[in-house]
Amino acid sequence: MNALTTLCKKLEETMAAVTFAEAGEFETARQFLKNNKNAHKRVLLGTDKPELATRTISYALHLCQRLGGSLEIFHMLRLPENETEHLMRQEKEPLAALNIALQQKGVVYQPINGPGCLADEMLRHASVRRDILCVVFDALEPDSAICRKAKENMIAKFQALHCPVVMYAGSVRA
Image (cartoon, rainbow, N blue to C red):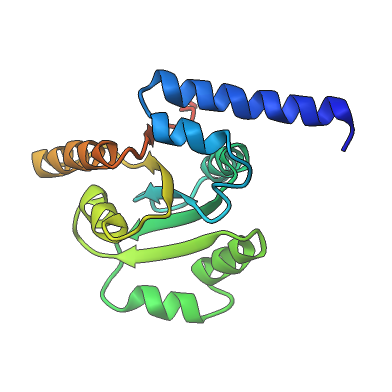
């Protein structure tokens, strides 16, 4: 790596640290200034959309690259009982193909099936984890006041853990 590339990388890391420090996330900012501190940490992408958009995955992977962590996708599905496991076992099915493609990129894919709110399920999933660096939340608009309240609760709990939450909404095309 030449000197200019090294300097640009250091500058990018410093600017990321400044951004987190300005937002009051001082511990995260300190982690950026230490080399490879985030190597074992993950960006958690949570979505309940039926299909994962390539643009959303690209955004999350770019964020992982900048933060120095890896990506874990928490995909809330609305399928009939036991359908998720069946689809993951069949190699020709879309979920299995997606899982294989993501594994080749080093991405952990967690399809979860259930009727509950994405925010509640993400909190349950991440509550015992210490390796979550940042949460990217890409969800359908909540259908009920219960889901809206769960999303607010999730954001507050992640912020209390000093874990930034990014609400991602890809560009809407008419």
